[in-house]
Image 1 (cartoon, rainbow, N blue to C red):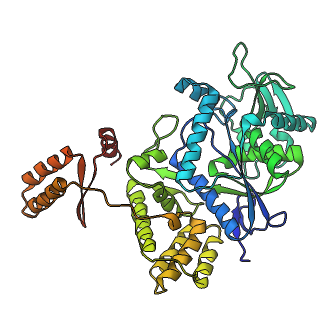
Image 2: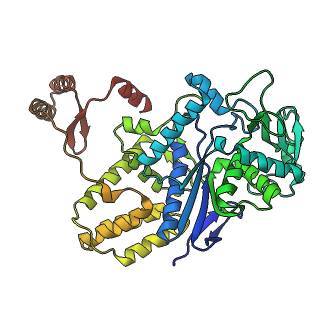
Image 3: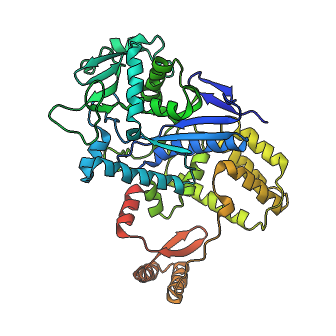
Length: 471
């Protein structure tokens, strides 16, 4: 078997991967906080994790993939202050916290399906595992790592010699330079394990505990659920790079205090998607997958765009780059579809592809191998079978794609388009504009490009306004 090398954030090095137990890989991925729809930047992380899982399975490993759903305990500030995001979303939407969690969990899973991201083997909700979280907090408490304040039970990071090693935190410097109000916390890096419900106020999600009625902190849920399903030390823990300094550092601290392990042998982190406009969930304006669908862009075009960059590099998102990726995917699809029935894969190209993908999931170079293959002189049936092999990792679903039937254009609209082309050729711009209006009144839009003009169904006015704003 060819060796897979992965970048481990804990050791900050490329390491050869081997499962801790036999042929099974146990992998935990931090899932969404389900108070709103997912931003496409969030979805980039799940795309990277899907490629990781597919690569491991391509190698012949059996992967047990666990992902959590955070439906309680994630406050609006990582400093354990502010409002619970689910409660806030509940108030905004006028629905119960439980309804909000269900609505956005379903929406998230639909996004995954549209991006051809495989479901984890186990979904686990924080609210279904409060008992496990309480038991872990009790163990951490008995081992001497906690203290109580008026608003909760906190982890004392000063008791852990190497707290923050994952992020290489300068804990002493953070404490000395702390400029925000830490309240009753002893150290700036201490974090909540259990939060008490506010006095004279009943939360929608709260439970009894040995310390009082309240709810678990965000960090303890992942540790407790990961250990329940994967054991006290498992193979891989994934998430976005923003989890490194707080969430994942705290998960490791809890696990060391509770079980004496750093929880996972490998810690892998995906980098950000950078957008031109500063859209965020908190403002209520952000790029959803539905935004792409509204522009008639196949979500797999976005998947292709993400594959063009290494998961450990920030990816600049523009509409031009997305359209380019969508065009490239369309070309590849049409080429593959025209090659007839698949034959036997070419071993040389499969090995080349494996070498790139096994080098820390280098999908950009993997795609380059695919295009070299597509342009090669190999028989069509060999190229098709080989690309299908590579697509087991890339996940572009090429094997199931079929050309779409051409848009039915009424004879009158087609005649108008022809007359407009003649007017443009004669540089009669007034006539061309008048004909364009007639075409629009029939429910179609004229799309001019370097290869000519064509028609598409007219888009809603609200979308056209948004498109002009984006442009």
